[in-house]
Amino acid sequence: MGRYLRGILAVGLGFLALSGPAFAGTVKVIVADYSIRTAAYFAEAEKAFEAANPGTDISIEVVPWDTLGQRLASDIAAGTNPDIAVAGTLWLVDFVKRDVVEPLDGFIDDQFRRRFVEPFLSAAAMDGKIYGLPIAASARALFYNKELFAKAGIAEAPKTWDELKAAAQKISAPGAEIYGYGLQGKGSEADIYYYYAMWSQGVEVLDENGKSALSSDGAAAAAKIYAELITKGATQPGVTGYAREDVEKLFKQGRIGMMMSGPALADAMSREAPDVGYGIAPIPAGPTGARGTYGVTDSIIMFKNSEAKEEAWKFLDYLFTTGMRAKFNQDEGFLPVIKEEAQLDYNVNNADRKAFIELMPSAHFTPLIARWDEVAETTVTALQKIYLGADPDAVLKATAEQINGILAK
Image 1 (cartoon, one colour):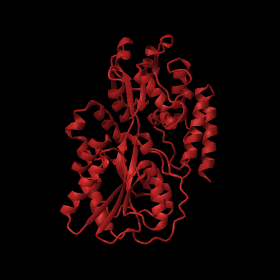
Image 2: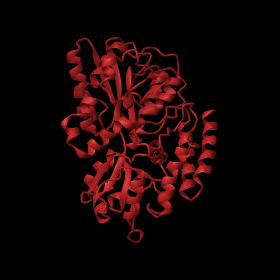
Image 3: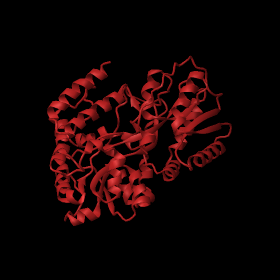
Image 4: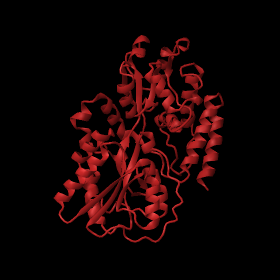
């Protein structure tokens, strides 16, 4: 799922003065092709909405995710963009800067707002305005191996980072190539893997002034948690050589006691490692009880030059009713962003989904800022130094200055 929901679009769009993409009454829609079920879902939505709204024509095109960004860039430049479209949430940084996306605040009323798990409605907010709705959502949680826990005499998943450290040491048996905690040290979301511990210290990625918070005491405390796990042999060796997929491979082999990942790992376990008994628990809490999961979204947005904004909003409203969200998320395996959907049987009675859903109100999101790629890469480089033995305080203070320089460009 990471390839669907993470990464920023680098496009030199060269936007032109645009004309409206469609006549009023006709709503042109481009959506991402998430699976073999996507096209059928949107075809059904189109048919049902048109039947309930005579005179409105919904025209939906399903585009492969790998080509969606370039397709939107080309259409915008040519003035042939749709009225509404699915987009990577981080793409909004560029779209808003170019002034091609419509703020939705004028359409969103209190009743609509109350449908949502609040952090997810705000995921596409910039400068106090909401520019998109969370069409696809995921989160992260703690996976743990039940058999390894039982062998180590551990009765339940750790609730705090101190408990996690103690459990990881009990589980680890390096001679048998069994490791208590699987730590990601490179690749996509390597910085996020660190933020789980940092958020639990009550620290955000950026402080209230928009500066890097890596120089804070809480950021250093979080880094020291991982440094201690490495020093005490409670992680797999050579963590800087492990991307998330590498750690997941060890978990599927039954060689990792605990790791952080998303719903896709649960799906993969049932297919690829059905004999490995696992559980899913909340990410451990910090000293004040704070914890945070990583919230990931794709957004569906409305373009500013649309001549069918009222009709487009009615269709968006329809897509975010409980029944339509439930059908989409069951088809695609995404998590609910609508409160009512979160209470439906297929969520409440599924232990895996329930664990993720309970974490969603504590979701944190990648900041919607320019040059986020550089910030993430700089953070990962710093973490690798710490994981290899460098002093966390010194490294993080220097990295905070470096990131603030990037943000000031």
